[in-house]
Length: 182
Image (cartoon, rainbow, N blue to C red; front, side):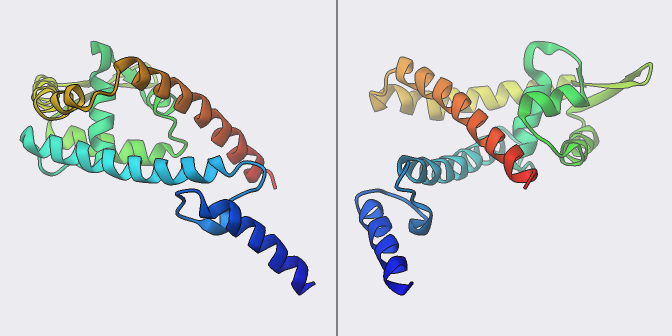
């Protein structure tokens, strides 16, 4: 029994040795690339969250977390009123309480307003919220877009990566549903 375990862990270690991963014990012989992707997602997610907070701070609002920033931009998107269920669906957030709490913070800060129509509550950005989104855009142009231009990474590659990540997100959603039913 011990020899079988060590043979498996050695094989897994051999696979992991050539890969940049954060959790060597999760590397699968069937798809070691997922472990590489997961580490890249962790790094990218943390970097992106840090970027959103710092960009919003530079835009003049130092008291927002990353989720608050992304939520404000989504509520502002296309200048349309949005229902809570639609916001949760588009942002792929299962827990409506997280979104509700963040919306209340944005309403209290004066960036979002809510309006009841029948039984539904609709959310939209205020003039102050729209102005903050535009300040964020200005900082984004000055900091991120100019760095991207210097990076040499083609915009088409970024678009293809975005499409791949959306597809991969469906794999994780399916796996999450499967795990929830175990």
